[in-house]
Amino acid sequence: MKKISVLFAVVMMLMTAGVANAQKIAALNYEEILSLMPATKKVTTDLDTFSKTKEAELKKLGDTFQAEVQKYQAEGAKLTEAQRTAKETELQKTQANLQQMATTAQQDLMKRRETLLKPVLDKLNNAIEKAAKANGWDFIIDASALIYRGGTDATPAVKKELGI
Image 1 (tube, rainbow, N blue to C red):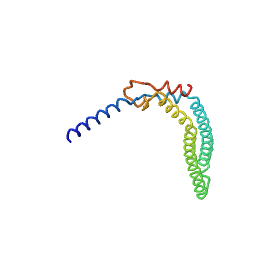
Image 2: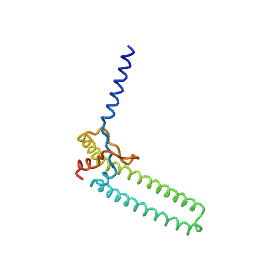
Image 3: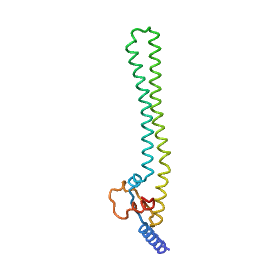
Image 4: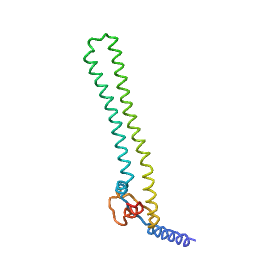
């Protein structure tokens, strides 16, 4: 019985070593491929345009606010205490609104980025999966996460799958 247990353990170790050696691994430069995709360039252009538009709107509102602050500073001494308090409260609300608008603009930019990039990333990931299946790779690892890179490079196969 003890011989059977030892024999079973040896067979299991050999099978495990055989399976580990049979796995094919490739490395891929994910960022390089993503940057070469035409859709990524369009997304970048769209996001830049959206960002500049929001930035211009906020700058215009900020300039208007600064002008109001300067006007208040120049004429504040002529106002009554009640008028000064009312104007300061108004300016504080305006400043809070500007800060809220800036936060909302940042959130809108992030949402837009996610929405625009999702189809591009899906396309890239599908191409990676097709290339892996076509070449018999069990694993594809992002090359940027590797300290040493030897062996198969999946980047050309995925580029071919994407037509770039």
